[in-house]
Amino acid sequence: MTLMRDSIDNNLPVGIFDSGVGGLTVLNAIRAELPHENLVYLGDTARLPYGTKSPASIARYATQATAKLKDQGIKLLVVACNTASAVALEALRNQMSPLTVIGVVKPGASAAVAACPGGSHLVLATEATVGLGAYRDAISALDPAAIVKEEACEMLVALAEEGWTDGDIAASIIRRYLTEADDGDFRPDSIILGCTHFPLLKEAIRAEADPGVQIVDSASTTASVVSQSLQSAGIRRQSREAGTLRLLATDGATRFARVGGLFLGEPLSYSDVEIVDL
Amino acid sequence: MTLMRDSIDNNLPVGIFDSGVGGLTVLNAIRAELPHENLVYLGDTARLPYGTKSPASIARYATQATAKLKDQGIKLLVVACNTASAVALEALRNQMSPLTVIGVVKPGASAAVAACPGGSHLVLATEATVGLGAYRDAISALDPAAIVKEEACEMLVALAEEGWTDGDIAASIIRRYLTEADDGDFRPDSIILGCTHFPLLKEAIRAEADPGVQIVDSASTTASVVSQSLQSAGIRRQSREAGTLRLLATDGATRFARVGGLFLGEPLSYSDVEIVDL
Image (cartoon, rainbow over all chains, first blue to last red; front, side, top):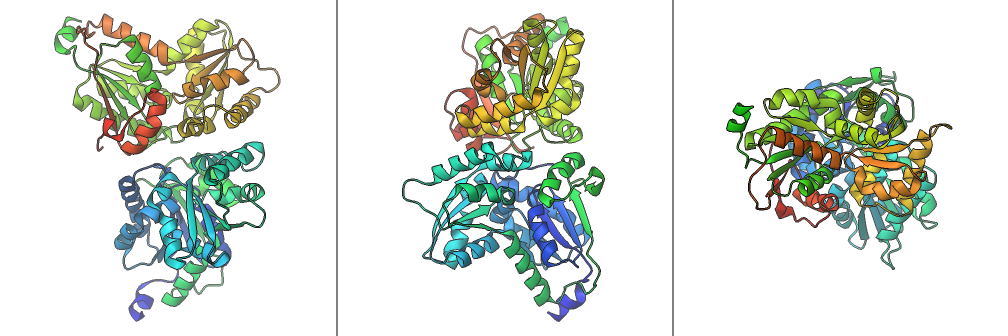
């Protein structure tokens, strides 16, 4: 512990990694919880989406991209992508050692179990996350009595990226996925937004869900885990000044700025985005 | 010409390249027109979609992927992807020289101009294809009197991949894009399906379009160009036997088989798909 405190500069940024722009919803929560921390975000837009790729490709892409963040100097890595968290968290921990690596699946599972102990959970996620049963495993480990159903919802990714987050089309698509998940007798207590794109659709999902269903996302729980982890390692930034934010992407600054602005909740210009070559 | 006839083996396959599975709609048309030709298809599923990436990345991906087809031995290359045809056709011609390389944009433009000379054309395509004005340029070169409007329709790509090709959701999404394209006085004579995913949505688009609008896609025109090109180079296969078909992908045989089966119009198993490493 003493070694950690001495060897990591508190002013180094927290690194946040995603396949694209969806992780900016997690960045928002971290920035709200930890306004004095410097942050650097990397979106692997050259290879997105991860959610429809094979586990081997996802792990290769994630380790290549996060090596760039390690080279830049970071004090902790947040894997702000459910698919990469589900598929590649161990590979990323090995690669980044001795830095702490925090994924979004376990915090999301914790939030759902805290909201509805012993309950039924519907996980909306990408095909890769569902294929690995990542949320099912994480929730069962925390709450063996829980019932979990997972539904792959690729059209929700496209909806969020297109910015069609309300209106009839969003409602119809959400209703279709919720109907597919309901095989007659499955009435979830919580709906888990198991992809970082989906918080943009939170109100539209709430409007289609049964009254009283909890809508759970990983962002704020992940931010709390980041805060606790920095605290316990003694590497919280000591400055009273607002932290800095750098945005890196592996392709397409113009599209990153346009779509990323939707997720960040503030306008971005392409000049706000630095392109890094892998 | 004599050199070409002597140096290219007629039994070599025609290579067909796409970023994913959409090009299988073009493969279908080639197979119908040229049933005796051997065909090899490569989908760059590890890096799809191309339509939202930058021109530099698209060109790099396309040349890397088609190098694999060149190594396998082909007698002609079809770029069965509108985005790659729009962005990277010259780079691919340089790379594959002296082989003939045929894209899908010019055949699609020819088909539209033939259907509606001097008319108005609405091109539905990916963001990258629209960004380069590829159809606008190709149509204007053939028919200076034509009026062309291009509309980026990323949600249609997702719809086709999800297999939601009919019903209310497809209709609503198509209606929204057609309404966005109609700024009050634009009434197209033709709608060009400027992405190889979109032929799966042809009937749904026809149902939402004004009566009498021609729905044009590149597939059959491209197949005719391939046939003429093989004929004029003297490299049509002479056998009376049905040609063989090999399907290659750079990632995810299971997903390729599931989604690709929708585009090929026949069931595929993952064992039908060979994974190649780039």
